[in-house]
Length: 280
Image (spheres, rainbow, N blue to C red):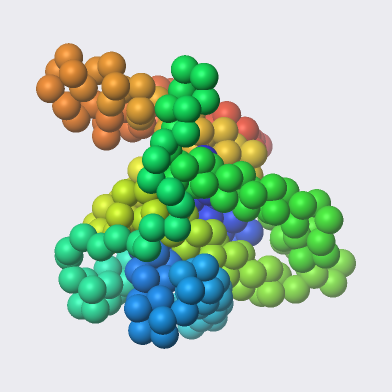
């Protein structure tokens, strides 16, 4: 579910603006480190520090779209992708400059003793992460179906010219998609940080690991992001549990990309992606 949450950010940006954001993993890391820094500097309760970090990520997404991506409207896709690669390098350098490459931890908010649910032994932290991921995914379902901005984002994703002719501000939708994607990434970073601790490279690697989930589900499909994230996460853990002991390790990291290659061979547009047919 954490992968599904992180994949949602990819899909939001691509669905609205047709931009593949290769800096998404660093939005994940920055959201987590931002929450830790705010808690340490201001001595706020950690929940309020997380809320402040999410607000900061929202503003960062707006700034990135306004200053970096909006001037690139109309340019070749490869040029826009290179901008996101440069953004990733800048964010990574900033994170390492401020916090370094060490390992950090969040304050312990939930009890450490595991919960025994019949034959299952589950830690409260994992249950909390699952609940947060499900809650945010449910919020986005309501957002896209019930709010004016959500409907406008869906309209722009389907047909920008038609949406603009009906009075929808495409630029506003682009800005909202980047802001929301950065916020979603920050939520994913906080959830992963509460599970595994904070490390700049490990958190940013989440952005690369969810890319197979995005492709598997379909780059422009919100339900596909959820299905792809859950599928890749389950396959990754099955590979780590059953194949790693046999071959000595490494299959957990490789399994998502093997699934990605196989899926592209069968369905190039993903499980739920829009099939585009051009007539010449």
